[in-house]
Image (cartoon, rainbow, N blue to C red; front, side):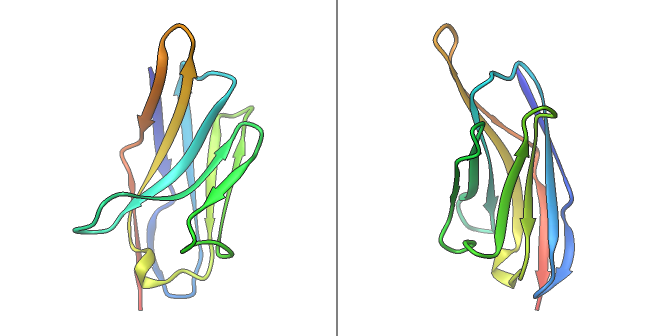
Length: 120
């Protein structure tokens, strides 16, 4: 089992910055993909950014150039630096970890989420 705990959300004015952190613990394999997803009120959860253990990244078009995802494999941490925030970035941000074991199969884990509110 894997546990994910997010921190760093809050209220910020448009144009401001926030840094989210996610700490992973438990049965974490050496190869995995961690990422951030968000869900605005009344909308479906959507991808924000992902990063593999080899630091290959993927971003949604809406955050490219403004957000940066990074990770510390030794500490099992993933971060999301969010700059130039817009009101449409408002939502609950969820940390995610995906991994695969030939013995146990796929694992897909979620944190509880942290609220990010960007005021105009």
